Length: 564
Image (cartoon, rainbow, N blue to C red; front, top):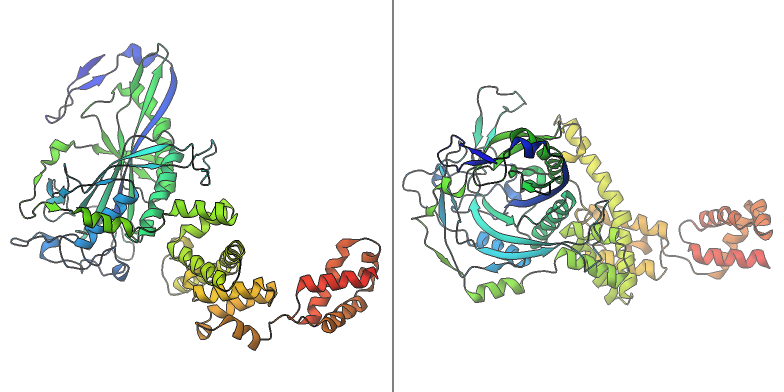
């Protein structure tokens, strides 16, 4: 092995593998990944000033450069003031990730120039982050990349090095409004500058892209359940930066490590998976060509091209010394009391993975259904409220859970999808560019339809008691989504609409007799043992019932008649 100078005075010499080493067959490639995640906290104001934050839902669509003030712009004499809500949000995330919370933390200046950072330095945390030394255990993941969320043993443990607070940079734009491309200039929007940013750094404990994606999804679920971020990936509320390298085993038994590549600013799980897969496939050959091996000063950053599905070179990565960290003279160290930590710990809700496993174990729910219910915090809250209401009305908990889940995942999901499609069509008609996809339109959730947990619980009670049939239940859910019926009592509305099931034996007999008269051949087939013909008779009887019949009662009466 030999070494050459990089030409960068701040870098160490680079170790270069010999030609003989590079010529050997590679017998094994082991992926090694650490992850940095930037989470924009959805506080009302920015990290160090009182101006509104673009990460808060009320300011998502703020006009460019309207969320600025002297602190954001770094004007002379402007002094930063800490955002207490951002600090508490960070502690809550740290506790959810099993971190220790620093009794004393401080703020540092990270010095570098970016055109979208007006002060030419960033207020961050270096050696005293607010959260440190945590760990998260992933569920077991099979060879196909599917995670077994029901399993409580066998998952890989991912260490959390730190979670520190800092301020976000602004945003450089390379297109003018209307899509006109700027080839020799950029424009800058400082709305995002100063937004509270929580950076979470993991140990390099991932060995597959699937593990990274599952962790990223779990972290997003945790942060959204805690209410610390809206987590809208397209808006950059969470940005993932995998640090990727490989352990190469050569034919002679030597193991070499490729230089670390940090892929910047990925804002979708698809991009995270794609970038890692690309680097895994290309780093061994890249090492053969350059011979450069892992060492201080060899790290580089690359971007991700979503169209070409490949990474591209950006620059060599700075080391900590290059940033010239020093304590910010305008901000005193901050003491975090044990009482504050305990108060925040007791305020934590049930975390998504624990809740998902509870639904599976307590309610015999499928993993897929449990996952869909826990994916959106507002939908999960609707389910919980409906289940509790129905249980209080006498429905057994497991039945209450099953019925509430069915309403949300079937009747609710259908109507939410319809409203999302209508929203996309309306925006397209108004001339908005959706990029050829509805995915750029904020999806309507079941929790947005207007049905409350109390109403849904009442609906579950009606269905469980057999007071309404399945068709009426779907229709009644739709009525409760309409503005004129928001807050209406489901039982009262069902009675007013004539949906309550008739349990009059004489009426049921009349419906069955009419169906047999209408479908004599089907009746003869059923008497001859052809049970598949029963469906035609039941359909005819339900038509006679005009929405007031219960399929189970009619089926029972029909079979009784045909067997006599």
